[in-house]
Amino acid sequence: MHIMEGFLPWQWCIIWWLVALPCLAYGVWRLKKVMEADREALPLLGVTGGFIFILSSLKLPSVTGSCSHPTGTGLSAICFGPWITSVICAIVLLFQALFLAHGGLSVLGANIVSMGIVGPLVGYTIYRLLKDTSVNIYLTIFLATALADLFTYVVTSFELALAYPAQVGGFASSFVMFMAIFALTQVPLAIVEGIVLALVFKYIVALKPDILIRMKIFSENQINAARGEA
Amino acid sequence: MAKNYWLEILAVVAILGFCAVFLYTSSTMKDAVFAGSDNVGSNQIAELTGKPVESFTPLVPQWEPPSGEIEACLFAFQAAVGGIIVGGVFGYWLGQKKSLTEAKSN
Image 1: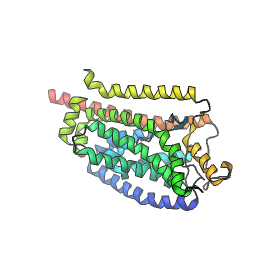
Image 2: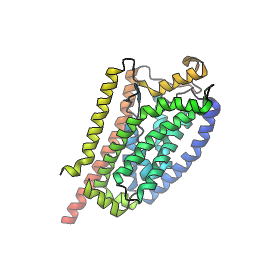
Image 3: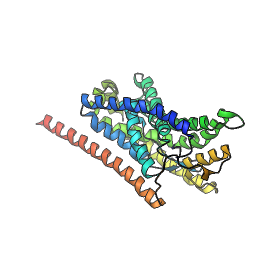
Image 4: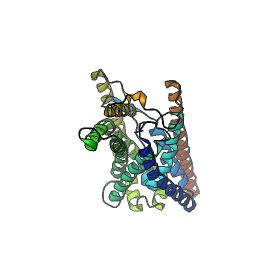
């Protein structure tokens, strides 16, 4: 999902940085508040953030004959919301920009917006919509994490299509082209990521249900029901 | 018993299915090179603008891993950091749960 260094005109780099910075600042402020409110939230942040580190380092082959990596942002978005997630993503993306030449400092803003902000925001919205319905919580987790992953790549396509509209067909035709490269490759990866993160969530439910209830991520009844069934 | 592990079974099936799809595509698509989609995207940009890929130079000077080996090392390092944190926390929770149940039974 990285836009590579040098491949985004400087005007767009500045615009995406301007979008990303206030979100990051708000995320840092939220993070401070969550940690002050409940020290037991820190291990949960470690697990959800740890999976962003692990999954975003795995470059997997896909049906299109190219490779891409999952994002792992969904769990963190569900537990802590998109703003705190954007801070963790910024750390991962900074590491990759500095040491791996995946992305770069000028395009970091754009990459934070796709992987750290809009992707998690989509996942979080889906979780909020399904949270209080009768939908199975593991299905909720699956949908939220898989779509957070997929939408990261949709946003990358969107950012590139805005910067490089095709001469024939303009933005729309460019968007379709980039979607074919990024989003299509991502579909199988997003499905596997969703299932794996739902499984991870099952273990969090099994080991530390009280923190999930205390942070109101799911209600006590839902957690108890989930413990019985899976 | 089996009902309680449906999520584990589903995950294994999904991962095996993913591998099967990879084996199929890599054997049928002879021209598939499995390059990163980042690079494929960059080539697409070069095509759209009509400028060669080499003409896109970093706006901010950038260090690049000198070889694929070093890149693999750094990626493994990133995954290891995540793995250590996840494993550590799960262990911490497991211990916490154990000591709680022991305290209750005493």
